[in-house]
Image: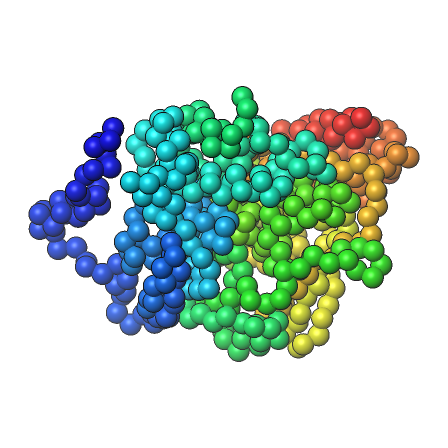
Length: 210
Length: 316
């Protein structure tokens, strides 16, 4: 496992792009290309991502997700549904998990953004990343960055005493229980169905007794 | 998405002035519904006024012992507020029954009230929809209408209002405070805030163009047992087929508001007086003018049964 998937030289995206280039396609080069005559609005924005500030000039329509992926090349955050339903784009903004497809990059000036790339590195995994590997909390891996960002911030929500739909007594602090974790992770969909292993990983990191 | 210009407003007056100045301007706060609709070009603002910097994110006591909830208070924070959890539990429960953790972190109190229907025909720009394109027709009537409304509907539209929070606010008789384009403040009862479709289903609320919600105000706590029960196709992260916000007092009197069955939070005060005669009598009063389709007729019985269950739970 040590020299396994983490040791590849090309990311999947570079591989796909190389494939597209070798097919000599004449696709439009610019993701923000517009039909002639349209009134595109550009804004300057500083994004604080994983502790580094990036100054960008963006089409105002750029979502935080697209800025992360297309401008900053932080391609861990995934575009699944692009409508806030799947959770694959989940990142942490000022300590809170959000769907990065449903917020504009220009709205995020002055906020601290953490993506999967900022949680850990291949050499030094975040405990949640390590737990996902240990418990096989994925198959295809597409939803995994969103699952992990969501899980990390979710445990903080429990710690902060934020209740959930399954919290029995609203006047008490919520428990670190299986039922609480399952309910709170419902905004992250896994098409492979790795839910039970994802749950095991979260339970381990939470230190919750079974 | 259509191109738009963008600005951040610093005060409500500045935000409202910008909304009046620029044709096609819209406010944006959480953006969880607006951006979704902009991607589909169902909403096509020419200018976005980001209101997140307005100082409207506090929850504070009112002089009479009620609660003023700033328009920008996030759904997560409202549900987690100790006073809301203790004295307005039906509101906390309703919020926690809605959306996902990520969305509740982004979505605001005012935005929740202003979210638009999730009728699939409203979202499908290839099909007629009177709410999206006035006069084009209603695809839900005669279409697949299992999720749709059974009361308050018209020949033009049978869409439901999707909010859980608003159902609890209706049971609590909340009021909505706004800042109008002419600079004056006004207060709107939650009962009057959302419109029934009639012949103008494209108008969801009574807000004027450019009018900004600044707060939602709750009266002093009324006590009682608070229940929010949501019946849906999944255990989590799904819109309601039927939901019930109920506040039941020891003397047996109660307030009951329904979600998932109407274009707005649905409450009939006269029906609540039928409580001594049982859930069926209350449900009959609530749904007296029901107009069901083949697909959603089951909701009549579902309301009755869910209400019976809620009242049993409230009595302990």
